[in-house]
Image 1: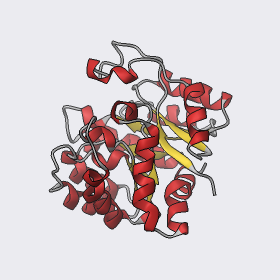
Image 2 (image 1 turned 45 degrees about the vertical axis):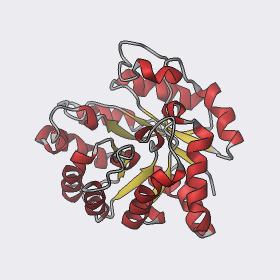
Image 3 (image 1 turned 135 degrees about the vertical axis):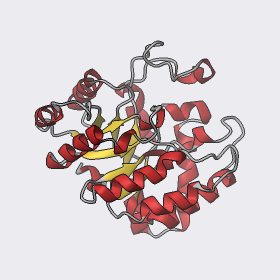
Image 4 (image 1 turned 135 degrees about the horizontal axis):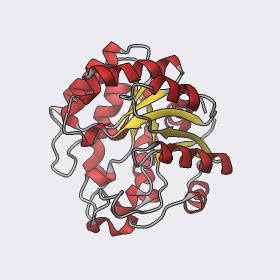
Length: 276
């Protein structure tokens, strides 16, 4: 079974466009391209990855598809398209020709309108996603978990995956109401979850494995190993210890799981969800 990193990014750093990469994130204020990632994947025993959009433009989607076309180890792409556009159906019909384009994402976590995902024009775009066989990545924060559960109920056939466990407050050691709301979202069988991006929610310089156990326990209790997948969130993880440490944290946690459960987590679930 393939071992897949279900969530990583490429970019050519632009200080204006990538303003979210603040000066305290000096480790990632540069270009990150396939030649940087491929040796890391090989060293860590992974067969491929899913490249996820980092900026909101079709130009980004097209660029990621070009990279995927040139590099076999990029098994899939999660791009961006304007789901609120009147011509979203036409744009999705166009993108349906690209076999490595698996789904789309919008940076809902950064929207002033916390309920943007429930607005009529956004839901119209989501309905078009299902018609073309695309998945949807939910990039949200804990305050939006309840809204995401409403969305998952309204679109019960649409495959969703929650990115980064909705970024729980690990540094503060807070788990409620996040844990409760995560469980409510997981009650919808059409939703999977990426165990990704956790180290950057902790104390970057001083985190220990024990800091993550309550959150990992909550995720595995809510979704089970058949609906969770590994994601490195590389290169963002470089600000908090790097790829090897982020992966090692999960290797240790999963050591008591069955070989089948581990195989699902490290690749099987991503292969099935994204049709890699």
